[in-house]
Length: 121
Image (spheres, rainbow, N blue to C red):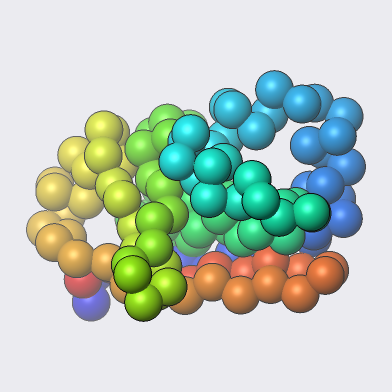
């Protein structure tokens, strides 16, 4: 294991930020991620969890906010529903420099908290 990161996001606070700044969705998430939650009546907890993945990935890489573009990390799902990471751009360069070749991700959320754990291998 090369690194591990964990992050938790307050869902209500995140929801408020999305309502206050509607363009935030496009700045934080890929088109595919936004499409994957578009059918939900309240996608705030799912989006908060995806944001937590980005923060946890930074921690797993040992870097802070601004080290890579937030679109460089995104969440996709396998047919089984298992979440996976897509890493590209500067985040991929950082991972390659550290010898990271695979990722494990776990995401969970309630109405109030979204959490993500990312392991870099």
